[in-house]
Image (cartoon, rainbow, N blue to C red):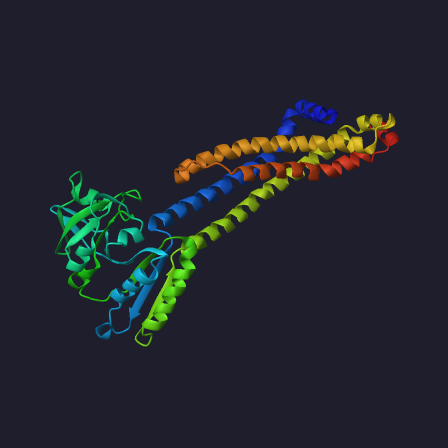
Length: 393
């Protein structure tokens, strides 16, 4: 306990030098917390983006080399999925898109995506109805000229007017608005809300083709993804003629998982870069403690002359270096929390705070820096001979 009091007294006597000594630790701890928190914010933002698109999807593509002499297997495939995989999925829908111009009297939208789907399209793509109704099985079977629109299309074409029941024009085709989805991506141009979905059975009328080549299978839980993918692969292998075309079955979570792995690696790299500042701070502590040993050589000689053991001298200087780095770590944590909060609001509009375990690790590491880099000066001080120490000026 006396060593701790003496350490604080020494720090108080040399405030400026002590602060400059702690500066490397302060910068290191603060930088570690801020950088890692920013990467976590990026990961959270990226994950939210993929979740908006809809996670746990299996994307299936059928490509026929000769469309004039090909068999449309869309109905057969979707019926099989609905029946054979009913315990593992929540929906299956065609999922292909095109572009074009949407018009409503004097207003137009040239950036919207036009999706072709069925009554399960919104469930497969994580869209929630706000007004009106969704596409129905009757719309699909009857090839009704109906659509459900995203919030940005509703804003850009209809403004404050209720869009449900109104008729917009898509490249000369009149489409009656059956419903409007909730905004899920800021309701901006070229966002996920800048879209409409129409019955996929209108593809002949609108796209001049009967072929349906892309599908989304919504899996009820991530634990079933491999089961569904394997089953779809088996069905394709048995039913799709690979002499006339090709198919792909993709895990829709792969992109999100790859992004998470990338941000985890980035976290390690940035944490390592910031950790270098901690090591530099440790070197600064060692230098100052060596200077302190030189300055207090006579004091050490007196203590050893009156019987102080080596462990007492070692603990005195070791405690002082640990207290220095510990105080620096605490200040760094405060700066890290403030910096993380500021960076989170400015970059991602999120409230970011370093995780508790990360804070504890940063603080413990700062203490270890103090112990590690203070050990040599402390041992050097304890090794001084009393006679030599007393002769020092």
